[in-house]
Image (cartoon, rainbow, N blue to C red; front, top):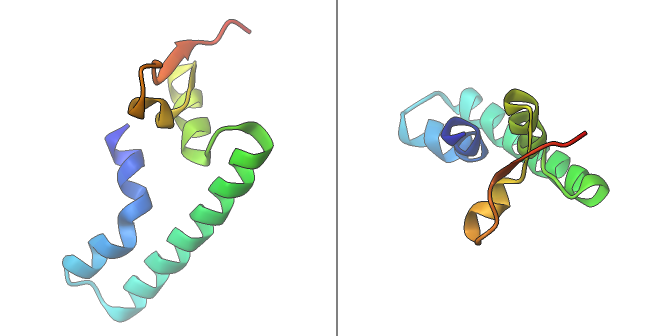
Length: 79
């Protein structure tokens, strides 16, 4: 789960690690694409792309934003 959360910050990470300018630009573009995809996904389903991936991997209904409050991050999907 931590690895999925880290993907949203890949552009600053590659800058700090000293990657080439082309790699940094690619990371920035991927970061922008994921932000747009997350927005579209959240508006249509109430879950981000990462939420869907974590849900598919665990077989549960997961919303990572729940980590900020009292609700559980993942609940057993009764479907």
